[in-house]
Image (cartoon, rainbow, N blue to C red):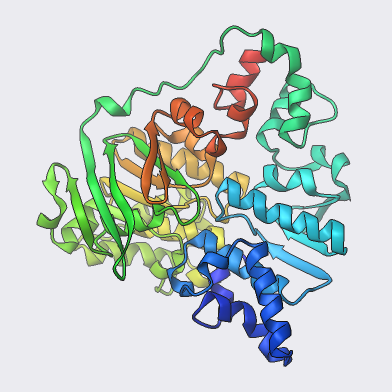
Length: 450
């Protein structure tokens, strides 16, 4: 079994030792253990990380490690809970290809729970759809189950809107429907302006920032800006330095070079309470922020820590916008991963910061909660908040981002408005863009093809 939160299942400190741990408990011969560990490292592309400490890995690297630690046991049934939720598109494709190969070649049975259906639907043989209360809505062959899903991946939703039958489960299937219509179109009407934020005042400016851990530099001369009322999306492969950048901006790791300015003032001039009031940070693991007895109290504690009055009505209104009003009295760590993510978001924004740093905010969210989050962030954006968003969720970027920065090995590979950035780095682009560039959304694609 692979947990939704990979960090919850790690036992030992080093990558190689974590993979070997279960084999040691089984008392396997040393030579067999070494062979199995080496094979698992290669399957999940972890060999370069074999001597690294688990806690120093990125979220995506930890996810691959958790899968390797399960596969090393050579199970007949592998159960995975959202195994691609923290993976970049290339890493997700590689992990799913490994699982597909093990299923095909070795007969491994895989039971997989996943919200990001666009990645897994093309591989599924059988589909089980559950209602919100856990009841069975439908089960049967995956190819016949699309109409029973409560939400559809982008290309399938496009097919539903245009009357395609059967609904496509993958880009290659969708391209067969698009065919000549895409080739004949001269232009694509688009709905999202990409110029708003860059004319606004700069709230956060990063100039040639370099930083790292334990003497090893991870970020190399990274520059970017976050504007008032704008969303800058930070994308890149697992381990490219995205989360490290957010930690550096919050002062959690030291800079080795460059400068960060918050509202035009060097960030070192702000003391920690001032910085935390003006710039909030939601890390990849929300558990780091949850320690109160109730969800409502989490928000109240943040207000008190900043010397601000606690208005329970306003805090309940924030929980309502987060879809957590019914959980106001619940113990935060009893919530689902997605609910904990939203509870932590409520806690860090209860002081109404001017800049918000988010690390994978859609992790663990179903489509309904994800759309609610997009509406909430869109409202904060319109109210003038500046948002720096680390994500592998390309559709989230398409819906919100004014500017996209792509990191590769700690350096800026591309920095531009979304359509141009996705054109330069198509591996990070939304599914609709890869089907019908420069469309970013299903609505744009429908207009282009009708």
